[in-house]
Image (cartoon, rainbow, N blue to C red; front, side, top):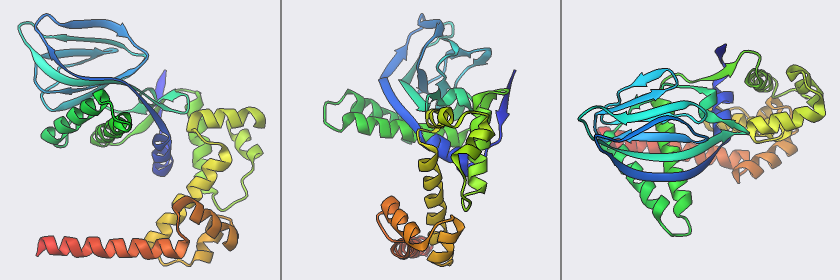
Length: 292
């Protein structure tokens, strides 16, 4: 039996941010009338962008007839079939990739639609084309650029899919992770101990550290400090609270808070606030200029 887990938006965002991408293939492909790829169970995800119509997909028990300008994710570990409909041909861009958060495949965890409309079909086609060009390129930064473009396409896919939740087997580890992440988010100012978090997940503290890192890519302490700094950055950018109050809200001394903030952002809290206010002023002026 499967279900979905509601996780605080910021915690879910951080869960996705821990995603590690590995791109293994990217290409343009013209599917002829006889082309088919039936009952395949692969250990990688597939992202398709359809440049025409005439294709049929089965993802598990779901059947799809994608249209031109649609993105489709075929998750790893799912039985897949793809073929052209009788007498039809179509073209598509595609890539094969792994996307893991810790040791979990992202699209086995996220409850998203299989198919979404591209926000801007022409721009999406250009992005996919650039991804393929860099994947085939031989420059030092080619693969890094290809992965950045894949990230852009995956962000579009998730955003166009609407409200995203985590999928999980009832009683599975994802439920334990979501419970711990939610607890951390609500107790950033408290002296949360490893033992408290381990108890929430019903694990021994020594095993809990490995479990938590496999799910998030970070140790519990690293994750808590990251969340504290993300909160602090938003306060510095959007509120007028003092630096000392921000330090108090995350349960830190003023000295330790300022030191950690500079390690994470490269600027002191006051410098960061000044930079963000200047950026907001410029953006407001540009917006007014466009409207004028």
